[in-house]
Amino acid sequence: MQNIKAAIFDLDGTLVDSMWVWEQIDIDYLSAIGHKVPNNLKDEITHLSFNETALYFKNRFKLENSVEEIINSWNTMALDYYSNKIKLKKGVSEYLNKLKDNNIKIALATSNSTPLLEATLRNNGIYHYFDAITTTDEVKRNKAYPDVYLLSANKLNISPKDCVVFEDIVQAINGAKLAGMKVIAVYDKSSENQKEELMKLSDKYINDYTELI
Image: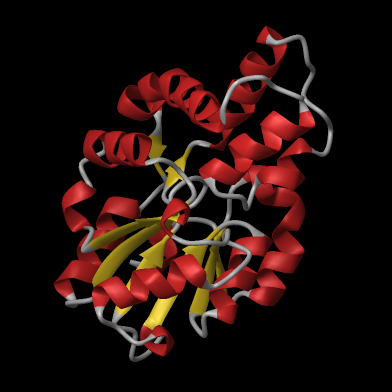
């Protein structure tokens, strides 16, 4: 990746091993209101913003709770995991350090909420690496579209063509490509079924960050 001036990272499934947490929260949240997790749920929500996911749950499961109440419940359920239990993927700290040493700007572009992203970045000792943090709730559309990546680049004052995006799902890689950015796909167990397509769509596919150090 020559001439890259900025690296934009997704959080869940890309920088941290956290997708298992959301699978468990889906089970716990839905069972508490008398529902089982539908087979297609993960595919339906994986690329949505936090707000969009809450709205999806409200509509699909006919919940009386407001979107805000649903989000608050999820934040409460997830906070202990993000504050104490979720760990970085192999080689993340070393790679972020390498980027800093090479004066490459670092940004986060995530569908997660601010309390949770801050909790895990601080707990894992990498919060200080980020020059900009953007959530999909700051833009009008989810990660299947370029909006969150373009806003991230804008915050960094870097042209999209000089950015590389790290993502773990097909929909998000398509969004980053629509932004005119290069993309490195990162292996995650939760998106293992997309591996072939991820390899095809991305500029590079890695199993972990030690391959880039």
